[in-house]
Length: 222
Image (cartoon, rainbow, N blue to C red):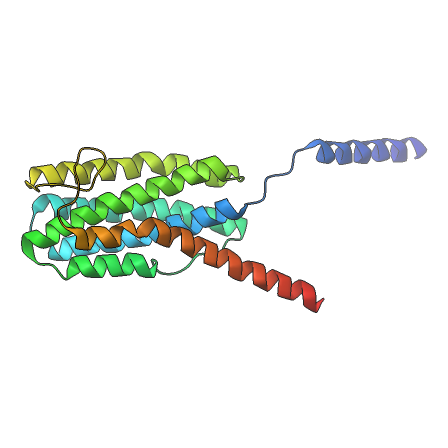
């Protein structure tokens, strides 16, 4: 009996040592949380943009891309939501006000003007999403979140390339500065689109401030 107790004690001690030697998983830092919130809102915005294209676009290519956005961003968002739940990060239930305003302005256009403004918006919004992913890879701490940024980048880049190609096919005189284009001819939709990067970052930061205040308040009450 004494020998049995000794063996059990040794096994328990070994298990404790093994747990102590196992590196703890990194907790999500501010950048991780910002990415999850920003990526989720970008996905919601792109799904809404795709639905708008299906309803209002006059060009088959734009409608086809609209359906692609819905399909791809629903799949991407399912992954973002799953990781956020695992890490205890609360996600908003709507795009940012800037994203909603940008789409509303595009929807105010009709016919070819809608198609052109919609493509401008997709070019800039997908560039903003790519920039958000690069920030996560540079400053994130949680590997699961960094993996999301890595996995989503090729999909987002494919959408960007598709939008640039469609702009050329439609004979748009110019597209937003960057890959394959010159300065934008239409400043109105582009101006709102350029605010999307700031909107994504501000939304993530605001969520972190709220959570931090709640934590401080809870600590003070204790």
